[in-house]
Length: 410
Image 1: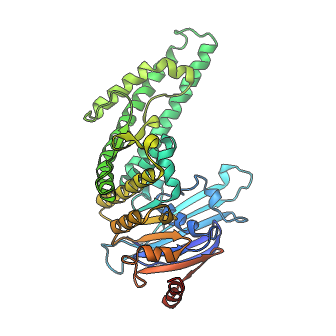
Image 2 (image 1 turned 90 degrees about the horizontal axis):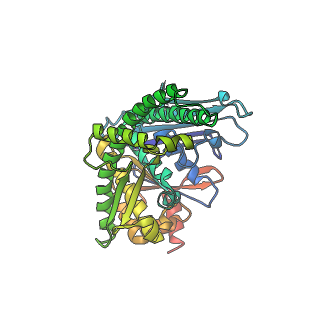
Image 3 (image 1 turned 180 degrees about the vertical axis):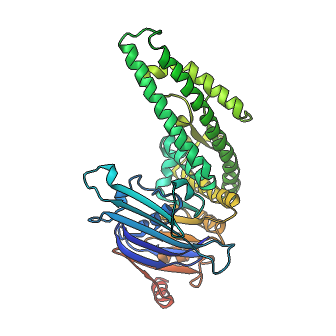
C-alpha cells in the first residue's frame, strides 16, 4: 500500500498541513524540534489509533486548540490504478476540566464512521522503528507484550475484541479478590464468604478460557516471528550471531498443548494461587504477566548483549514484524524509520534498506547528505522525495535544490 496524501489539523505543532507523498522513499530532514517525528507519528496513528509515543489523545492536540484531525489517502498496491481509500481520525476535547465525558474520538473509512475501533485494524498497516524501541529489550515485559498485541491486532481484528474481553474479566476478578480480602479482615467465616468463593470459581473459568485463546494466538505469532527475525539477523551478522525469541507464559504450559490443555493448566494455576491472590487483591498469573524472552547465541540479550547487539536485535524484530504483516495481509505495510539511521552502522543501514525494496518508506533525519551518501546505490534523486521541515512547515525539495545541497558537501 502507498500513502498518496497526508492531512493534519491541529496535530502536535502543525496548525494545518496538506502533503503529497512519493510512492517509494520519503525523507524528512531538518533540525531537532521542527516537527519531523510528529509527521511520522501521525502516519503510524492511522494503523491502530494509537500513538507510539503517548496513550493520551489530548497530548496530540496543538497547544491552545481543543481538537485534532489526521487524514490519509492511500492506494493498495494490487488495486486498480484509480482506486483510493481514505482514513480519518478526529479527536475533540471540549472539556478542559479533565472530565472524560467531554472527549470524543471518531474514525472514518471512506467517509463512513466506524462503529468500533477493531474495524480500523488491517485497513492500513504500518511498522515503525524508532530509538525508543530499544527499550523493548532494556525495560520490563509490558513493552514487549504491547509490541506483540499490536502486531496481532493488525493481522487479526477479533484479537482486539478478545483483549477487551480479557480486560473486563480480570478487572471483575481483581475486584472480587479485594472484596474477599476485605471480608477476611472483618473476620468473616468460610460459610459467610461461600457466595464470594462460588463467584470466584465462575470468574476463574471465564479467565482460563479467554486466557488460553490469547496465549495460543501469541504463541503462534512468536513462533513465526522468531523464524523471520532469526533469518534476517543471520544475514545481517554474517551468520556469526543467532537470535531467538521465545514466548514465556504460565508455568507447565508446553509448546504442543492445545487450547483445552492450556485452559486446564491455567485453571489449575488459579486454584493453586487463590490464597495468595486474595491476600494481594489481584491476579498473579495469566497473559497480563507473560513476556518474550530474547536470546542472542543462547544468552539473554538484556543481560549479555552490547548496545549495538540489542539495537540489531530490535531491528531484526521489526523487519520480522514487517514480513509477517505482509504475509498475513498479502499487502506490504509502510515502514517508518524515525531518526534511527544514525543509530545503525553502515552495514546494518544497508541491510535494512535492502530488505524493504518495493515498499513505501518514511525516514526522518537531521542530515540528508549522510542518508544520500550511505544509500547512494538504493536512493536516487528520481526515486526519493526529500522534504525540508522547519517550524512545522514542510517543503518538498526540487531536484535543483538537492543537487546544489549535495554538491556543496562533496
